[in-house]
Image 1 (cartoon, rainbow, N blue to C red):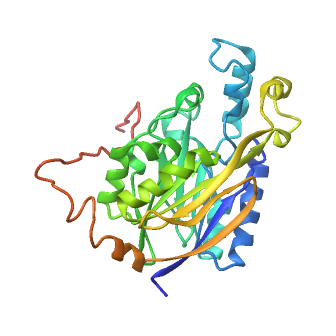
Image 2 (image 1 turned 180 degrees about the horizontal axis):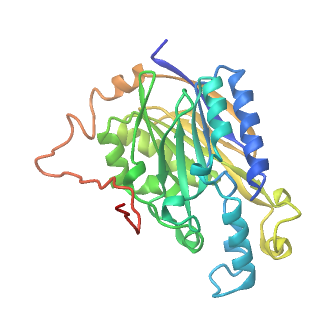
Length: 316
């Protein structure tokens, strides 16, 4: 059954800005999905340890404000340093269950000094090995107040049974050139991760599927006002203006013809399962292939810089 892949959509709420507790919840989710025979599990953008919701509700752009400094420091302290082994337990679970994982993290990148953070999408293969870490190319709007812009190093795809899988973070999915880069690498199962809400997923998911003639798996997180931990710095200021629902989910799957396989799921936390068939990819490429027989490289080409960017290069 190499043509069939059992996929799990993990639409869950983080233990917000608590690295250890959120890792434990992710581990429990992977273990639960393994009981259903899942071969790929996908988690939302920035799930570990959570999305910076405070920026929209606490004068996030105000200069030198104590609340912003303290919340940012708390965020960085709870972000993930891969080099320090923060994802080791998740990798071991992936290996134990022979399950691939796409996980949205806040990466505290050691190769950029360890004080700035990146919205990164990590791919762990079924052998438990981290194969790519894609740092979001362009944080969106108020995200830029706490996230750093990434680079092209993570524009990678990976073999998974007969599929070739790749992924992007949130509004990166609206950027045509990064999409084209993944298509050119042979991607036919596209992973789109989001902080939450069906207003993000309900249109772009089907559009990318129809454009690429690929499966598109969109996975979002959940977040309600009641989910903020009581020990969150300046919680009173966040709750003063926060709506009752900050992220309602919207996880979904579109097939290579652009039609729904799983329609957006809203206001429901859980793991949602679907089996997809690679044969449908080949069928829908019969009449359109954006980087194959329906492309004109003699007219338009894309050049991609996949160098991992760093301010300092040492020669010892």
